[in-house]
Image (cartoon, rainbow, N blue to C red; front, side, top):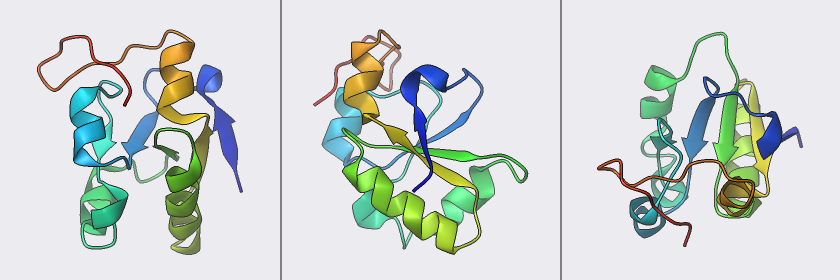
Length: 109
C-alpha cells in the first residue's frame, strides 16, 4: 500500500478526509475534501470532480485504517492515491493546523 508521512505533505497537496461527519466537524485539515467512508462509493463523483487530474490524492482518516481501505479502492480505479500514515492523530501531534468549518481551532476526535 502506498503511504506518505504527515511530515512529508506539502501545503498544496490534495487531501481527502474520509472520517465521519462528527469527526470532521470537531476538526480537520484546512482545504481538505470531506467524503465519509460510509458515503464514499455513492459520492465518488465528487472526488473525481475535485481532485487534480495529474496529481496525487492523499487519503486521511483518524489513524490510517479507513484511509487505507479508500486508498486501495482508488488505486483499483486507476487513481494515484496514497494513505497518510498516522492520520489526523499524527497530523495534530506534529503541530499541523486543525480547524473547524468556521476556521476556528479544532481538535481530533
